[in-house]
Length: 469
Image 1 (spheres, one colour):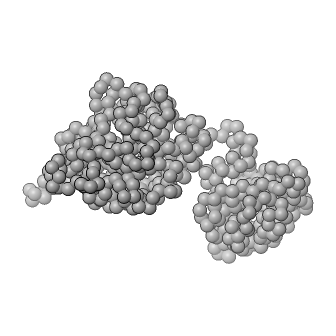
Image 2 (tube, one colour):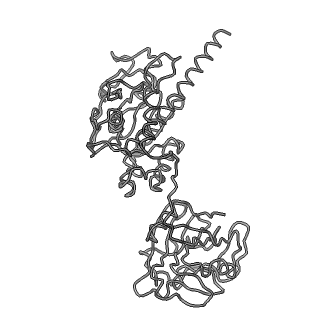
Image 3 (cartoon, rainbow, N blue to C red):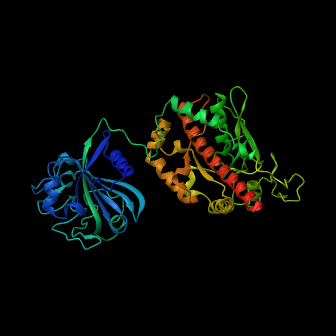
């Protein structure tokens, strides 16, 4: 039994505890070992520093860190427990990370040892159970409960109900042994293989050799970039172009203006250093705003290939089938083969409801056509200092993982369809890690486009069979 504590939560506790990488070994769990003080002490006494984690029936998760050890000797722990703290990880199922440290001069009451009690902190801000507790069938009705709340630990103005939900009914209580582990290597939440120059070369080779399904008789896949103003659509094109031109380029206009810098439908080619073009187009579109950017009709025209290349959007004169340059008979080469929603990771929580609704309406059109959809999650370096210092840490960062999950939920797409990237922004020279991250994203996008093309080919074949019959 590995325990309920997630890798993300272990990382958070590791940061709060400090002094380097930690391993967490499950010593005691009431669902496995029974909720009895005697068993708790048999499993946890003299084991050194531990973390106690409580999971209540309301989806809240909280607990405490004992920096010394548990013992059956009745006492409040002495001054060597100055590093003890209480914590909150979730409230009502929602992430809410808070660390509550000891008040100055209260160290002697950081931990309470009693042979007849379970884990107890302070006097008694966290008291778990004081006798044998029988499982009710769905939870354990603990008989401890908080008292003297905020007397020994600095609770930052929070009430006990804002942590415990006014209940001691819990579905689990775990105690983990905490040990320093200099050899610990954080496991990535998404496997990408060895992160090095060889990986980049493999990715580039796959992208360079990509071409549309030959039987469909067209040369370049069209990838549409759609997203809010400032999310990084144009910057992503510049980043991809930089990877293959072997220098930082700025072909697409990009910046941080409040209104979209892109006003046209621009299919950008990606070229090699030799000047040869790759077999796909990254099609930039105006940034979405509450009352500007693509609308549903224009998105329909975009997906079906009716919009002419370099078309200048005009709110006062929207594109219609009567527009002079409108493509009335688009071919497969004109249609969009994959849509990439570009979202700023740092603004997911404040994304306009109108813009989100607009994208969901677009998704309805895409689903009707079977058009694959991906999410490009930009500016991930601004989420996490570890990623900011080392982009190769992206797939080990729980903060990035958390935002990937959040983006997935926003648009209802699989997590594997959410691709974190860091675009070239302030850099003047190429960076191996930025190149790898962008190439990983582009490879997945092209693979999705290829899958769509094979679906189109199958539809053509079945349509011919139906006609013959």
